[in-house]
Image (cartoon, rainbow, N blue to C red; front, side, top):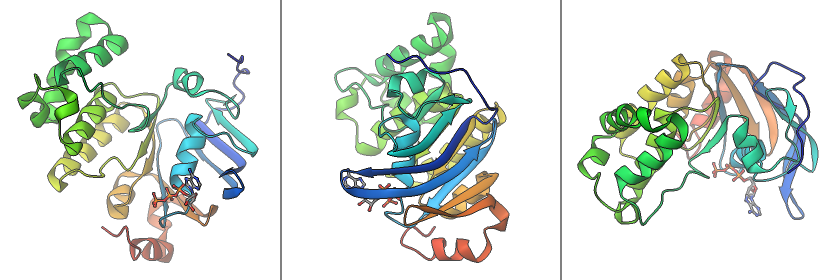
Length: 246
Ligand code: ATP
């Protein structure tokens, strides 16, 4: 394991001039933005503009070919995913997949016990089943036999009930019924109220802008806008008019 340097700034997340890609293909070109402590930043852009690539770079799944990524002021540009996770960063839903051969309740218990200790488990379970009643109905079912949407609820329950310092939320609502998405967004508001920071990647642009303090718009791997969500103006129209419109 590489030793991480001492913190140098107050932003929870900061990207400076980040280039990244896949083999010869370059997906990000000099991307710079930051997420302050307690802030919700919506990362928007058309399909293929580089949003998931940014999320991967921030969680160590992909290393930048140039530029720096810092978490809590610590340079994590070359860090492993588990080292970044230790700084309090969770990339959901990637890296939070369910254990197929364990029941719903066993999956949740394992996760909550690790985060909160044994005594915290009953309250956390109650909160998870309140958030997703469907999981309560299926608490004894093997996670591998849940539907796709139910598995997503299970991985989300683990993240939303015990929120990290920075949640990188990549398409949280994908595959969920609108009524469930409403509940997920109400919980995200609670997560923010509890002081967590969120980088929110969402195809439902209106929902993302409704919750976020700031928006960063990507266009072909470059930052085209970075500012207060309510000042996105006409650029928002272009994004919203795209295939991911609400
Ligand atoms: P979407 O909204 O459709 O999910 P996105 O904004 O998240 O898109 P990315 O997934 O970051 O976009 O992809 C950015 C570019 O990188 C795209 O052109 C994509 O085809 C390319 N890309 C992504 N993953 C890979 C990969 N593993 N190998 C090669 N190219 C990739």
